[in-house]
Image (cartoon, rainbow, N blue to C red; front, side, top):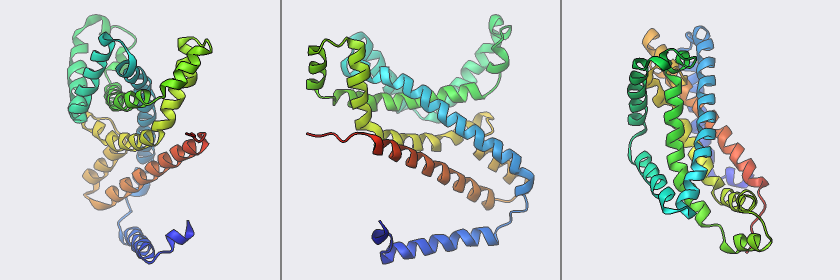
Length: 257
């Protein structure tokens, strides 16, 4: 590891990166930071929980979507394939706007929704942002899980059936663990992409970290420093995601031929 890092071109790149960071820190105008620090903290928190919840909800939808396409009956496989095709074939920004300006403008005209206990939540922007991010993640990961379930060796499933395992136990102890083991690196990459998709929710007034940076730029007319800070925050969050998935990959048992 250290030998690879000590190669001349890597040392030069590291020195340039350190010099650039020092130049930004020492030469930038950071007088606005104390005033906006609480808002930045709230933006980071909102970004993180939108990311985590959308991944959890999206993956919970992706598993049945992938299973339906890989081994489900035709009446389940076709709708699942159509859903993944539509989600993957349309921009996420368009999906966010359709949900927010579509459902968001439809619900106020329905009396029983306006009078329900859910109305204080549905009148806000974040439920539509969370729904759009979750459906987008489900559409992409549904296709990933389709390939994962299709790659599970048939001999493993046949052996489980020969042992008398019920179908549900075969899925939970054979199909799903083997499928997850094969796509875990892909899921890590998709989680990073999901993180980089969260700034789009700022277009529907959800105040996450990118929206905070835009607010700082509008209030102070300082352009680059807020963007540098946001870039650093996203780099840290992406690094944590990569480390978490590599840790999970390291705990997976090695598959033998």
